[in-house]
Image (tube, rainbow, N blue to C red; front, top):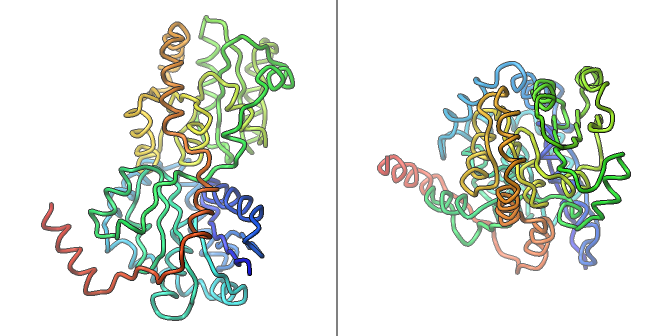
Length: 394
């Protein structure tokens, strides 16, 4: 008899939902799965709760990124940070809890910490019999992701597992799989055909500028910098759902129609990343995971403090990226890279070493083929001991 699989995301940015979509696609392709239900958990709470998580995050990202960075750092307090959040989430989550009970899942995968905390509370209090996998969607484990009951954590890199073990989470429940991306990001493409389809020429360096699905980025300023690069290149500019930004960039590039293609939200990102020479983007968790799955080096732009800074650290340490601390440096750094194709090739190799294009399939294999076992439950007594150990370690 096949499994019933529930996948819960949250529309805080786009990465959590995209990771859930990749998992759902793989799960639906497996013969040992009877039914898959995948949805945004915030659609099953009240409007104010959804706005707090989703709308507020978008506004703070655009207007007060420094505050987000401060909050990320100050709230990264293991075995403490999740308590206040759970007090806020549980009263709003009754529709979500009812949905879970009605579906009767064998396995639940959460790509955001909000539903993970609710499901963990149900399991630890004996109100739900299901296996829980928590899928981390950045290259750093923040304390908000800690849950008291779980079967697996799925993390992006070995460093995360080592850190989580130090916090007292059981090592045998932490799997280093990478962040789940759609399978196309690991597949080879016909470079010539993709470029020609978008009016671009094979054989020229191709710069990909991504504003993100929400279109929150310094993309317009970046394009102004590209116009100062006196080297041969062509560029794809993806503006997301920001029509005002797209129109402004189109006007800027009206005299360079053969060198630039300006798009809104696009479903062709796997194609673009597979043919690009370098990606200019903020280092969001999903964008980073998709890029390294394609072996695409990055120029990191304007990272938000907190998780984006941590993602940037991983890329820089691996030699898969360069970073522009100011947008005024974009033209200068691009000239240096375009003049050094050997360095670009090495950065691409380094990116591919980080990439895990089969993460979604690996997570599905583990949760569906691993022998059933009881969840790991962190008791209050064990939690107190872990907090003392962390405090003593400084």
